[in-house]
Length: 183
Image (tube, rainbow, N blue to C red):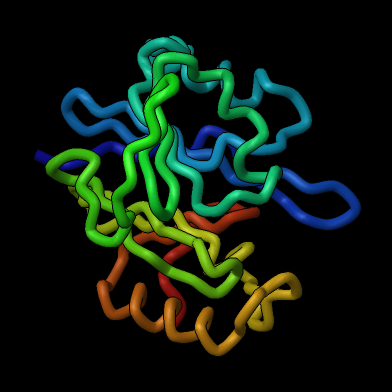
């Protein structure tokens, strides 16, 4: 089985900021990655409806990290389980688990990719066209090479190398449109 990946809205950063929001489907899994700040919630909700889904169909939400521009709209999905670097949250249940290698479905897994923050994770989806990575290791296709908000640039560089070693066919960055991996 392979996952289907849909970018719901492309983010940006400058005098305003919005995170890139992604939906991944794999069997029973309907996951939204980084439902953060956007100019209008319809930028998240309308593309979901266009896919024939509603907010209650979303089974899981993944936070690449805990900055508000990647988490602010999580409450749009009341039936979902929420995933971060160290736990799964559902209702009033907090289940400790390390994100490294955690399988959300047969084709979707999480890995630790610290650097922007110490708790960053990347969502990996095996698709018909190759591996897709939703990550904050890059803000956009242009970089920046030096993340202006990185907690640890050397760790971020090592995480970028680790991800690139997996040979993703597509990278969905934290604040921009998807792009092919850099050389």
